[in-house]
Image 1: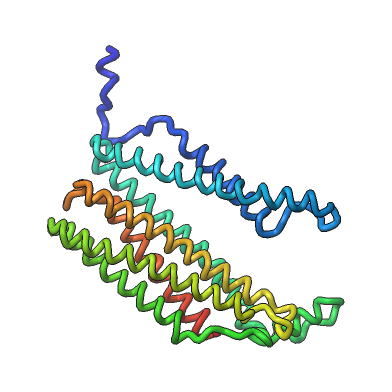
Image 2: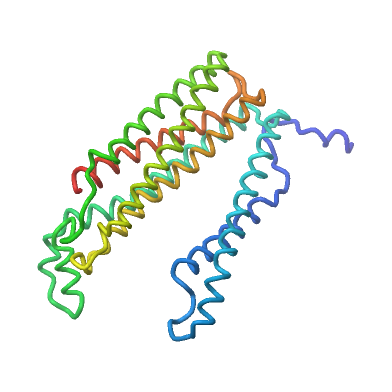
Length: 302
């Protein structure tokens, strides 16, 4: 009787108990607490230099310990999913569920970025209405600073330099990942590896260009200077929207790099390669979000 229940007689896969959801959640909490304490501090200014120094010294190890936990969780969790796939647990029914899950995940990411665009459009489109706000304390100075968009004193970036370069990089990467996907479907593993390697390289290049752009903004005090007092919301929205997109590019690059390593290890076939397909979907989503960022943050309201 025990043997008859050992093998499932259905197309569904019941996942074994896994430590990774709990471990990754705890690691993210530790990482974010460490990041906040590192950047903003966690003690009052009058608590003394010794307490502030000790807390600042402990925040960096806390952040990197959390980051290490996140990376270990990513590796372990993905390894378990890959193992399930190779054991035949990803039946056609399970594969459909995985596709639905990836689609819903991308839909949630769309709403995530919609919140940033909503905030940006509210500040950019309705700036004239803020000039009519009654003068109440310090809010009057802030409302005056926000009455024009971009706020007075803010030096915006030239959309046709680094932002345009990154747009070309991402659009090119979208074509190379599509080429790699079609090559894998046709059974051409060599072309798949070449196309995927180029895509990963372009993702790294995009991150490097954006890092240089951020350095230029901060080093030249383009968004935060004496003339742009009370106008810090522009920089906050800019860094939140473009920074989170850059983070998604980094995650997508890692996603595609894992697929490249799996291809080099002889895994994935023309019939069974959902990991690569999901990575390609995610990468195209990142491309589309950037087109909206470039059009509205850099060009229309820049």
